[in-house]
Amino acid sequence: MLQLLKIEWLKVKNYRTFWILSALYLSSIAGINYIVYAIQYKIYHDQKTGDIANMFLGGPPFAFPKVWIMTSYVSSYLLFIAGLIMIISVTNEFSFKTHRQNIIDGVTRSEFIVTKLICGLIVALVSTVFVFLTGMVFGITEASNSFSFENTQYLFYFFLNALSYCWLAILVALLFKRSGISLGVFFLYTIILENVLMRILNYYFDNWGSYLPIQSSDDLLPLPVFEKIQQQISNTTVNVPLQLVLVCIYLSVYFFISKRKFETADL
Image (spheres, one colour):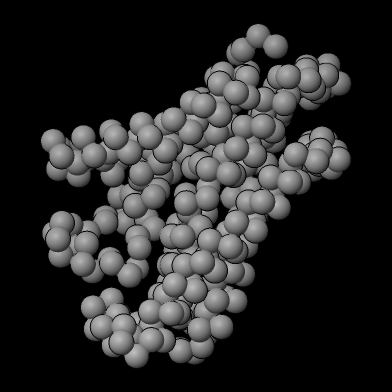
């Protein structure tokens, strides 16, 4: 397996687009968190708005221990870029016929696709580590509370969210093979279609929208600032164990369908 990962590394080592997208992705995580941090800093440190914010919203969301929830939530809005990276990685195999060459060189179909899925796991893991570092920096900068690892389970929830995006992207790329179509389908579903379906299901079937593939992992990352207010308005809370089970089921579906698709498809 390490040899297969080395082959994957050689494919992206000099691939400029991969590194540009990766740099854009990681810098965007830091950037979007900084923008939100700057806004909340101005609100909480202003004499007129600070007391009101503390009264209705609680303490600063970038202070420990809330910072782990906040950075995970904010960063989750950029996971489509992680999906983009995975789609390009997979569709390039079909465009340049490198998957055929790997099979000719002795790599089994099963080994090939499992390696791609592991690459998706690595992208999700790197994303999570970067979110952890981002949260630590902003938490120390806020410095209104002492350092705390409380709520770090939300980093694990972010990892599952990132892995869901990456593996769904791999599955879409395997189904459509061409980058343009794959990107279109991926963005159409994750950004538009699932949101529409979620609202329809929530309206007619009492919050069934939480059972959709991406939404099941998105619900694990609430916005900490308005969490209590949202619960009072909707009178519902997230059933974390159920959501975790759903996420694991969907990840298993992505894994086995992707594996089956590549093992049986014409090369």
